[in-house]
Image (cartoon, rainbow, N blue to C red; front, side, top):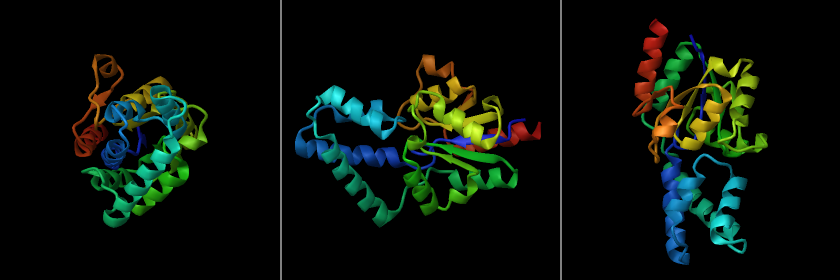
Amino acid sequence: MIKHIIFDMDGTLIDSERMIISKWKDVAAEFHIPDIEETLMQCIGINSHETETLFHRIYGEDFPYRKYTSMVSRRFHDEINANGLPVKPGTYQLFHFLKENHYQIGLASSTREAVVREEMKSIGLLDYFHVVVGGDMVSNSKPHPEIYLTAAKLLGVSPNQCYAVEDSPNGIRSAYQAGMATLMVPDLIAPDEELRQMIFRQFQNLLELQDFLAVAQAH
């Protein structure tokens, strides 16, 4: 029975990606940046360096990405400072279940480690994790498997002894290539037929995932 589970963060545990897209859409409207939502969908699951590279590829090398992303970040943090981070339904119940049943829990996020720790601490989850791997701790962004291989190594187990919980295609590809059993809870992008071949199980929410783990444990 698998007792090691590694989570993505944005779009999986916190509903941050919708907020970021909303802020980008506001900035795009002000500065007449075309097709911003389509561009952002390609960025889901990759790190900040890869995101900047993608923006320059789409909008040109002279596109002031850092100026705009700074504006987006400021508006995003203003909102979470006022209202807190939106936590995905079922998150707290699932983590209580995992702790009670002695799972080893990891986090593998494309977001920088310091930000991951800050955000997980702010919603009271940081102490649940035995391992935290941020995007700045690896050389290759998702969908490359490095981040999940690193998390498994730090947990001291083989990747095939781990579940990986993801919301995005890039994340699923990363975990699948690492050799993990992928559990998908889609957020903004539904899986296509190719991706479904890589998914071990798919759920509508984290409470469904918890039910699956409870049944698996009972057997």
